[in-house]
Length: 409
Image 1 (tube, rainbow, N blue to C red):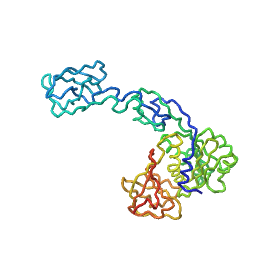
Image 2 (cartoon, helix red, strand yellow):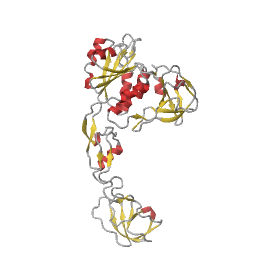
Image 3 (cartoon, rainbow, N blue to C red):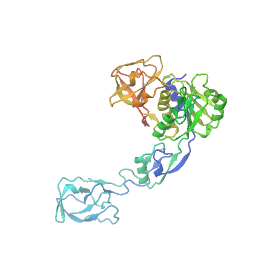
Image 4 (cartoon, rainbow, N blue to C red):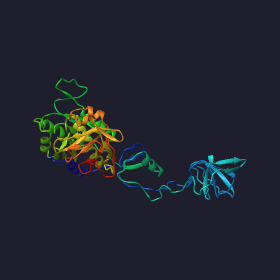
């Protein structure tokens, strides 16, 4: 059995051979950029007006209106002395422009305008290359593409972008007692909640997965079902990794020659987790109890998947909170506590007293807190770190573990 922190270290040391592809911008949302992108065109490409107004070449008490300029006009005159040109937002400014006076800051009189406020040189002008100059870094390899980064790419005339291919993820349930929700079940059966929960969590964060069915509690059948999983980058199972007489998953993996990275974490809930590597496929066998498996997925598997995807942002983002109430832990092990965060206080669900097979705490919670082996008591109003549900991810390594040294009364 290993510590929770050691499990992180092992998982973050893993790697996959990522393939790249050219992705059209309209299909690139959420994809991971596979190479650095540099500016090939100044942004803005030309100096233009930031507002609807009047372009001027000198500061005067009044100006005669010389003409009009619209966005897209390519014949740009020079402003005559004591004159101004009516100009629309985004239009290229005349070469001798020193400022643009907004419409609402002038008074009109016949064919003249009179400024109502002091004029500052450079006001309301977007200068060529103000945001990015040719050769500047635009986006970094490993960035997850969103609306802002896609807009930047489009501004450079880029229509397709190199991205990493999405991870191929397969999901199994396991156990002879498991029935699918569409099947008829007896009192001794359990409906398959884990696979759909895992699929939904992954999809919410941009991962695609394929459900592969239920693995039986039979070693030989297990070997037959899992020997061809190397078509997937990642395989996630639930159940079958405990120490029960019918839990043959580790034996089946060893028979196939898989490398067992770890089996068992000093953690509550979520102890019976197994991680293995079979050829180039990374396997996560999560606990069968729904709450345990989902918490393992959120806390350990998701950041690993982001790292293996080539993303720079794979560190789970910690938030600061005040703990509400007092909670006591038994045994020297790490604990994950579910609760609600109201923007200031973290309130543990039922004071941390619930079973690892329960779904109610997950439905009622929007955050979780992780405490390491050094913490036996959390006092009211203590400063702690929490993780939102669903979690946020950052490219900055930060603190998500609470220990006795970092927690202040």
